[in-house]
Structures are given as structure tokens and as C-alpha cells.
Length: 127
Image (cartoon, rainbow, N blue to C red):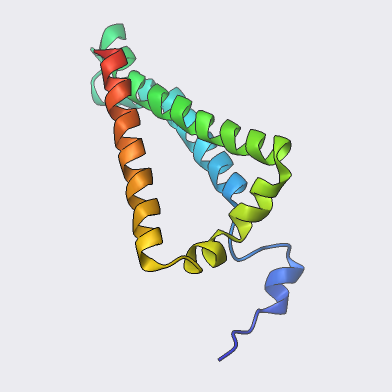
């Protein structure tokens, strides 16, 4: 069964799905706006809130902002400096589905344990 695309949808300049860079950009924009507005929102709930109270609570949002920015910049640099990465990322589902099940499991668990290792090393640096 083939899906039909509404021509008026395309005529208005809308697409059905955002690209990864657009998703990251809008997510980054949302986090920046949240980081800027969190102190005002907290002061609406508690007018006696001190500078340290909302300053400490914005640290988590600032950490999300920095993490999101690091992901966005790394993807941007990989696509800018290494053009095959962009084509590989667009065709990743096809490449991944061509692997056997044990190769997919090895890839999945390697990424999982490397991310776990990175989190543990990051906690070691902090603490």
C-alpha cells in the first residue's frame, strides 16, 4: 500500500519530518529559553527565593544545554569535515539491517557499555 502526500502540505513549504540538525537546533533553542526563564518561573512560585536557590536549580538546565550543544557541534563538525558520515548517517538503517543478529547485538552492547563507561568517567571527574 502506498501512502499519498497532500499536495497542499508541500505547497505550503511543510515537510513531514525534521532533519536531525533541525531537531537538535529546536531542542537547543527550547533548552536556552528554559534556562533563561527558569528563574522568573521560580520567583513566581516563591517570591522570597534567593539568588542561590534558582542559581543552583539552573545548573541542571545549563548542563543539559552544554550537553545538547556538544552533540550538535559534534554532528555538525563530522558532517562538515567528513562528508561520507552524512551519507552513512542517512543510510544507517539499511547498513544496520544488513548485519547479522549477533553483529547487531555486539554493536548495541558496545555502544551501551562505552556510554556507561563515559558516564562513570564523567562522575569520576566530578567527584
